[in-house]
Image (cartoon, rainbow, N blue to C red):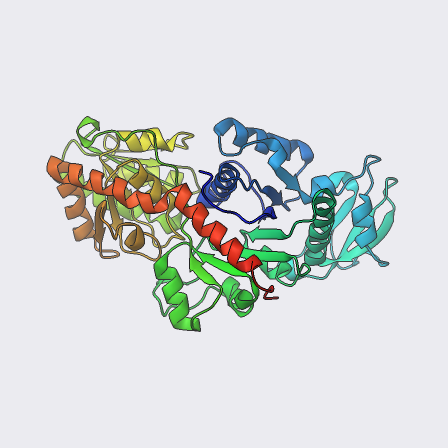
Length: 455
């Protein structure tokens, strides 16, 4: 996949955290982007800022490498791993960034980075914007100065990394920011040879998730600074168009869906379990799995051999298990837990079902298409409408249980429909292939580097 002409630059992918089996599709798609960039000849560094221990970070990385989600542990860097010197005190770059001052006596502090850093506990949805002093300590544990808030800390680390990389090779830097909170903090960072490309992973709207619905409060401030990024990558046409209609066209926005790797071969529809319906995702309220179970009770009444598997973990597990028992569906609906091999789950399935109230793109739906698994989905924001535009599934009006049941029954009972949708799914997934995604990303980086930075 080396036909993506990435410009000659250092590439940094910046994420709040990357922890196995946490944050669902966000973690999967962020790691996939890094792996696909490496395969396209532009290997990035994966940067995280969570204050875990070096041992925990090493275990996370080893797990990702073992699963094939990352190329090597050396591709990762963490701020707090880098914050400690060999003597156990704060690293030189961190001491250089600190100024005079003391801890805020009104706040509680917690020691991280082996005691080299004391972070204030700020109880506020906008904690990341605080300028409360972060205490930097020497090897004896004595204060060596303070840094004014998380934003200043993150920017100091990026400045340190940039200097390290440029000492090796004086190339421009492209930061691919995967987190809205981090984007707010670094939007003004960097010199004239730095470009910031901001990706989007989730919806910006509140319930009922229509184009004119209220903005999620966490996004209001982000939209004010969005024009300052060198590029903004929306995962679907529908979300990009909704944003344009609301805020006006932007010169720095483009559509760049999260890509999925196609399997070496697709299991024919005739070789699958004709009654198996699967869901992949968190067991969380936004997935509306209770509604899926209730609808499936009606499906089983018409197709007694139908089976529903809800793969994933989450806080709703006990609630969902109780509902299954209440409806007498213990033989028809199961909660198998997490899977490290979603492809094998999809390869056995006759149908992939999604009843989510909202998505960013719907990575599991994209994987279902790549595996030739027909999809039945509510027409929600965002993802299903874009990905099923070329076929591969049945889109039903959001919340219309009658239509959902009818679509499931149709696919489960009509072999010809399953075969047609399976073939369409593979074709539809072609627009989500890594090679295409890398060409889009490479072009965005090239365009950004070809003109002055926006900040």
